[in-house]
Structures are given as C-alpha cells and as structure tokens.
Length: 353
Image 1: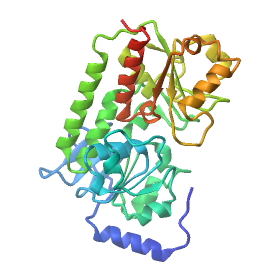
Image 2 (image 1 turned 120 degrees about the horizontal axis):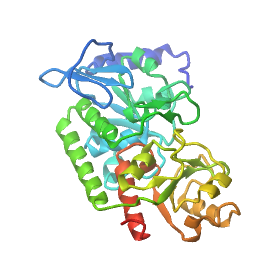
Image 3 (image 1 turned 120 degrees about the vertical axis):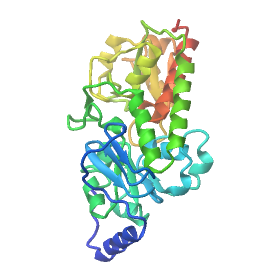
Image 4 (image 1 turned 90 degrees about the vertical axis):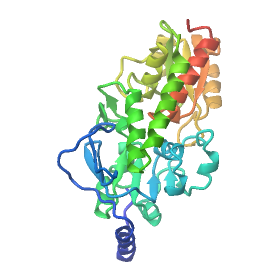
C-alpha cells in the first residue's frame, strides 16, 4: 500500500485545504430514514447534511462535493452520466474507453492514473469526496484505506454492488451468497446523485436505464442456451460465476450460465472443464488494459480457435462470440449495455425465441 513519506508539510497543506473548503466529514451517526443502495439515507429538508449507509459505514456530507476523485471507471461513468464533469478532480483505474457519449466531458477531467494512483497523487488533487467501485481499492493493498482518508476529513464511498451479499475476504475476487440485482446498481446511481445534490438527474438516469432493459428483453426467451463469460487470462481464465454482473445479464435474457454452480465472482477454471461444459455462446471481455494475457477480444478469439482444448467447442466452431466491455462485465451502469448486447447477439444467432 502506498505510504505518505514523512511529509508533515504535505499533510498540513492538504488538511488545511480540506478544512477551508466546504466541510465534508465522515461521522458515525445514529438512526436515519429514507433509502439508499444498501441501507438508509437521512437528510434535512434542504438536502444536506446527508448521511448514506454505505458498505456498513455511515458517510455524512455537510454539503455537495466540489472536488471528487473517482478511483474506478464504474463510479466515474456514473458521475459523468450525471453531468458532473466540472466537479471531478481526478479519475483512475480504466479497463476500457469511456462510455460512448461521454468522451467530450471525460476529456476535461484529469486522469491521475490508468491503474491505482498513489495516495499522494490523490491528495494532490485536494479531494473533498473519494469514490470507488471496489472494496479492494479503498482497502489494504489498494490506494489507501477509508480510515486514512477519514483522518484527513475526506468522506469516501464504495459501490454497494461490491458489498451487498458479497464476501470480499474469501480469496480471489470474492464470492457472492446473494445474486447481484440491477436494483443495487440503480441504488448506487441514486446514492451518488443525492450525494452530489442532483437527485433529479439520478432519478432520470435510472428511468432511462430501466427502459433500455425493458426494450432489450421484451419477448426474449433464451432458455436452454448456455453462456460462458471470459474476462481475461489465457492460461488460467477468469470466468464468471453465478452471481455477479454476468449473472444479472444472464437472468435478464433468460439464459443459463455454464458456471452457475460456483458463487466465486471470477473463478479461474481450466480449459478441460470448459470443454466438458461446452457452452453455446462465449461472451468475451474486450479490454484495453494490459495487466493479463488475452485482454482484447481479438486475442481471446485467436486463442480459442488455435488451442487444442478449445477449438472444438460448439461456440468456437460456430463462431458464437459476443463482445462486451470490461465495465459491462462488472457491476456498473454498463451492465445494462451488456444486457442489450447479449440479447441482440442471441437473437442474431437464432438462439432466442
């Protein structure tokens, strides 16, 4: 984990800046009312102070943040979709090009790092609010812990989709006891829109996403069709278990996940087991990052069609590939995009009634 060098001047400067700016303090609060993504919300008639219960922690904002640092692409794209580019002080950890339609807004926002930035780099942006999509980003071994930011008076928020019904201490990418639902994703949008003082924009965005899901899936029946989701890594592939974002996509289109019998988020499964399951369709993560082997869809297809263990798979022989962004395969607003693309692919292959 990055450690601040013994720089008391840096710490005093950052702390002073945060205290001078409109105060946003993380506090332990009592009872609350209303609703949030995975807990309660309380707010005054004017909207602030606002307290969200997030991943087991209460986050209190005294006013709407003006300098947000978003440490994962998922939360970044929500903030950009809410029209908040002018209040984002920095972004980090990108697996894909920004969501289509957000390119112009994103170009105005500083990118702190393509992957995890250092704690110092985040503090240099003088944030008054820090968001992340994954518990690990704001945990030990990540950018910094939530407690480290709290000590500097900086409130933090972690996507409830990485907490609700999920055990992040089970190894790997964690495991889920409860399937992820789109309502949790929608709850995150509502949380962030309230936190930023633009509740109406959040409600509008959720309504638009729900309408897209309805349009994509109305009349669709893909029962009897098995899907396999491959995120990355050729030697020991990360394939989707039952209950994360791919599970939500699969349920929405009425199909089956070839590995629905594992609750691990992204278990590493050998190709011999894949051959035994022989999925009807393979959904491929088309990533632009360079941290694993076979990141792009092109590289994945080349591997599938040349490897002895995979070239005779039904989906490979019939070239039944559906390409998704990495963000669509993680819990995010792009999961809706994933539903649309998988539904369209199944119809194109003649596998949906």
